[in-house]
Length: 206
Ligand SMILES: CCCCCCCCCCCCCC(=O)SCCNC(=O)CCNC(=O)[C@H](O)C(C)(C)COP(=O)(O)OP(=O)(O)OC[C@H]1O[C@@H](n2cnc3c(N)ncnc32)[C@H](O)[C@@H]1OP(=O)(O)O
Image (cartoon, rainbow, N blue to C red):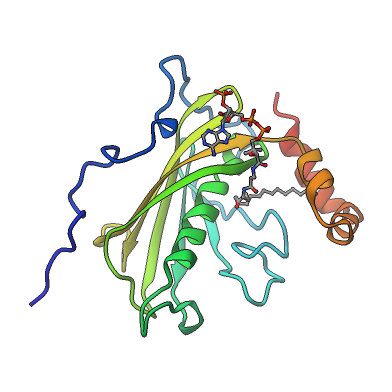
């Protein structure tokens, strides 16, 4: 007999941290005029990123597409190497897929931002070989703070809800990475003109 796991119908914000509720003076997120068109693949922000990097052999290889407004979609196929329990995806891997999807909203806002807080509900178990349809959107902006939410559905964009997350991203300057990253990777990234152009273009957000 199949059962609906408890929590599946809980109202979205009921148990969230207060820090994930935008302040009263927060504004609606604005899609940057140069943002990729809806349907366009966004590409990777860094080739060695665990979430989206093409050159990361251990990564999730998530490919996000621009949606309408400040939203993206992405598909993630759960592989045997993503298991936690036998035949089921590890929760940390699923949280990473959500985090990466939310991070991809930066392409539409044209800011560089990092995850400050990520709260995830694991609503249903996710079997190996499932295709998770991820959708993320920015919901509010307050100064450097970007409030955003994501869902993961099984098998199709309208499939059963398996995951949902609310997050707070914080806008940073490129110096955040230069000051904190391991020098050898920073040197390599800074020697790559495409990487530097991408990062700087995001930093200057008229
Ligand atoms: C070469 C370059 C390559 C570039 C590639 C692009 C890569 C993109 C990668 C994307 C990969 C995918 C994504 C990833 O995986 S990103 C990787 C995971 N995330 C991180 O590593 C971030 C680590 N944390 C930090 O660096 C700092 O704490 C940050 C930068 C986040 C804030 O420290 P900062 O000193 O700058 O700012 P602030 O402390 O004045 O805070 C500012 C405001 O934010 C509020 N706040 C902050 N945190 C929290 C919290 N936890 N809960 C609630 N609120 C929080 C805070 O109250 C304040 O609010 P207000 O008082 O103003 O109201």
